[in-house]
Length: 120
View 1 (cartoon, rainbow, N blue to C red):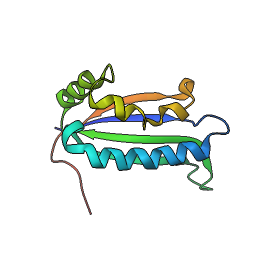
View 2: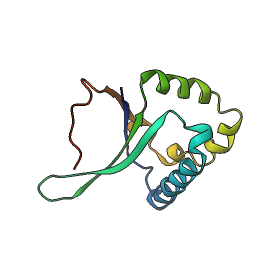
View 3: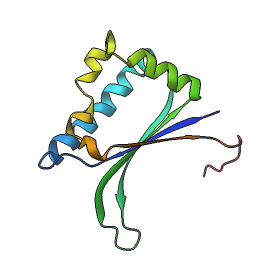
View 4: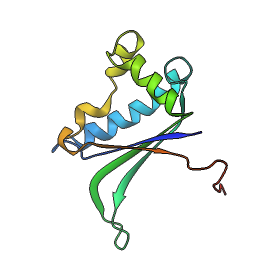
């Protein structure tokens, strides 16, 4: 059953260009190394928060990580916890260096009942 980790953040002041560049580099890196380093992942999606009426960006971003299951999420986090082995190289493209850490939030979600859902 899918397990989702939802993270939100605001970029550091004056670092928006660096932030955007690192997010793009991060996606390329993860795609290139998915099989050996991120095998528990099913997907990763990136969004900006906007006002529903005006479409104006709030300045907050969000990433939704989909894992095969909660156990896979925990296994991945355990394997990566000290940034050793191949994760030392991965840390170089970790976009957290451009996040205001005091704005980072994490919430976790698990499917209530599968296969309830629609895909069009």
